[in-house]
Length: 340
Image 1 (cartoon, rainbow, N blue to C red):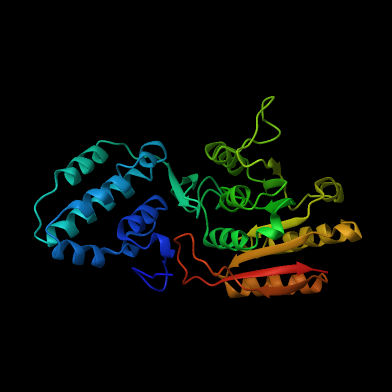
Image 2 (image 1 turned 45 degrees about the vertical axis):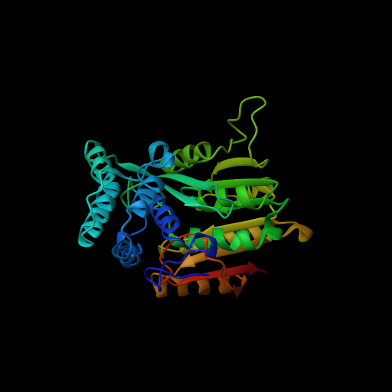
């Protein structure tokens, strides 16, 4: 694995370690601009009389087909191009018309409340998501993707045996990054996305369609997924979920990411997890995996205490070894397996 830019946070896989690939991956994931390998780019431009690398970066970012069909925010594109121009000008290289033409085109665009983030998979395919630009929007935090979802998706790709051919339920699916990745890379038999906020559920359905995943309830006759997975989207309110909900779902694996963020929801979350384990038939108790970014240590400790008080045992398991997605790895993310 090769580490570039900020060594504490962002890394790329060995096959993606050239500069054009790093800019490509970071740009479409809308990584923070300071995380890009600008110093390496400047060094290359000073040592080379050619502007070929800049042209390649432009073609891999703002002029790439994905940027036309699933664009990052207009503001992000403007800031990216402005930084690219600034770095280019510090090297005293000849002006590159492509850069200024691209910036002029972006400046003509109006800003939107939503944007696309696209995460490259090891296959070269992308998981693209329509997200709100505000962290808290429309009364929920579920309209953006959080670090633990990316971590859990990476872990799932390293443990495909847990998911392959199985029925999976995801709690608090949000924008769908983890589930879409599992559907594309782990070949489950059935995947149930769930959330309770109506705007999150609508956005989630749009993201599934964007990634060519047809929802079973809404699929027309003969509709099929490129992944071959049966996909469902459920409105699952943790506070009112009953035993009938658990018996009807009947899944092999339950996963969730970044669901421990508010101390007020901890009791109903633990009750939900406990009901799943208790209501399952003895030979069909689901495996449970929870990935959490520990932002507030007291809230997370409260979650662990509530689990213990409910008779749910916890094992901390190692996180992913291979770093596929670019995200802030200085955050403390813990992955646990739950069982009775």
